[in-house]
Length: 93
Image (cartoon, rainbow, N blue to C red; front, side):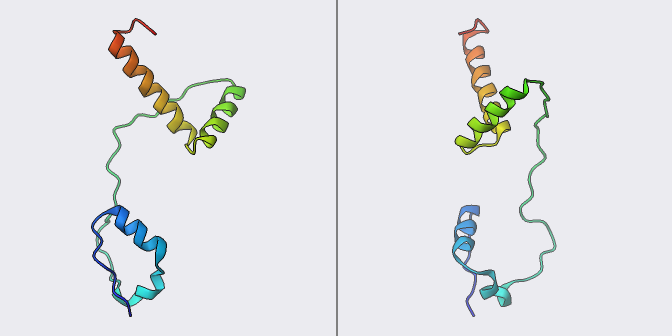
């Protein structure tokens, strides 16, 4: 039976399991007593905005073309614009 190699990064873990079958390593597994991959508590705040349905649909389509979630696309735009505004002292573009 094969042994699971020592994998140091999440990327290594992901690449290994993308190309290997867990059932080949059942004898090498052991129970886990604590969570290993825990997301840190987010310092993010949910912000709800109202926009026209047509705009929401356009956003969703554009985000899908870019391979992003709609919220990720909008968040990136907000960050970009805030950075611009902070650089210009809020004087606009």
